[in-house]
Length: 66
View (cartoon, rainbow, N blue to C red):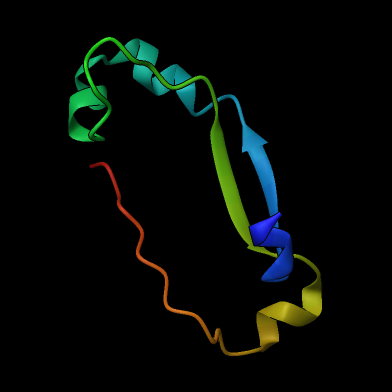
């Protein structure tokens, strides 16, 4: 609901969890506590083509796993 209020859309990605199953060390690198495992990934962003031409007004911090 909060994402929608910010005019954001989301999409779940099940295939991203395959990497965690294939390489369990990714859990630690991603900061996932021991005993837990991801069940899906979620992408969030602006919906619609017109949003890509606008400059984002909110600052977002993203963590990446290498």
